[in-house]
Image 1: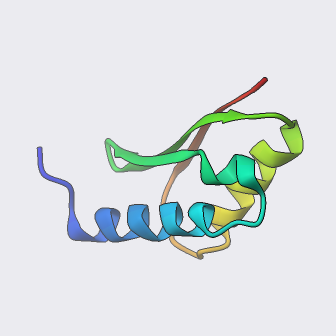
Image 2: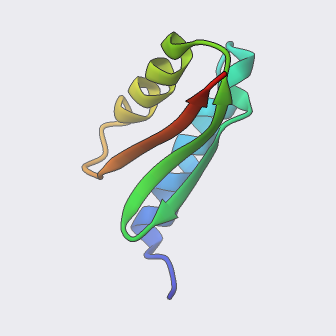
Length: 73
């Protein structure tokens, strides 16, 4: 099943936002499209970083379901 161009673009913007973060933990996270949703995954050292990653992506203003699968170590 091919990704829609809209989801692909949102996925790229979300990944770019994380990669550009000043917080190293966020740069190690992965954003993927799954069944029309965005899924953030990976590991961070603090619950705060998990929430920060989610808010960073939500701040992009896109109308899409976000699934936060980040594991806090």
